[in-house]
Length: 245
Ligand SMILES: [Zn+2]
Image (cartoon, protein in one colour):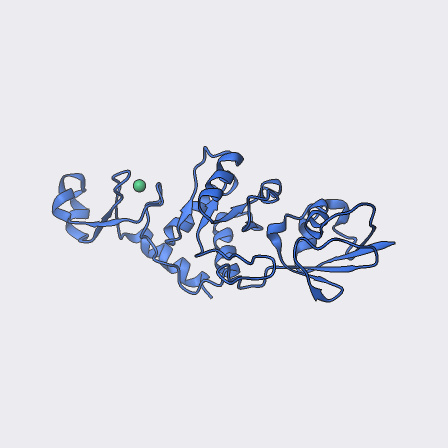
């Protein structure tokens, strides 16, 4: 006898190609398996699942699949509040902060521009990213389905959009961000919050026009880069204002 799996929202698009059009899917139950493992066998990482119903009642990832059962698998609701406990995530994230893998490096830069705490290093392999997540709970933004399936990844999102600006918009909409935390408050290279620095302390490092027109400066105490509000800041601010709902 079969179990039925119905994937909702845009989840069918993330399944292995052979399952994408067969929704709902009916499959015989041939061995003891949890719904989490059954979902991932279809190609979908557990990180994409916001809710599971078994015969209409809420279920967690450990639910054993039995013949005759029907599972409805839903994506995360929009907006997704990662700080709220749910059946699938009883321990929420303390706050929204990210790790971005090498497939979405430009998104990492945009997120830092918008002020989000975003760890990213183009040299990090999958093992390092998993170690970073073990050290501090964060949400992994990635396009790597296999990485998102790893059990060390409690919170993650398979980025759908291709273009980095569309990816930023996707993140802003998904998490219902009405106002970015503090745009242009972080070093784009190190992710460290910038500290105010007196113009007189950095005068020799500034161009004459900058000295003339700019008064407020921030500095990264890690890499010593200096930041100030220029036309690029204004442009990005306008872009973010358009993206926030
Ligand atoms: Zn820096």
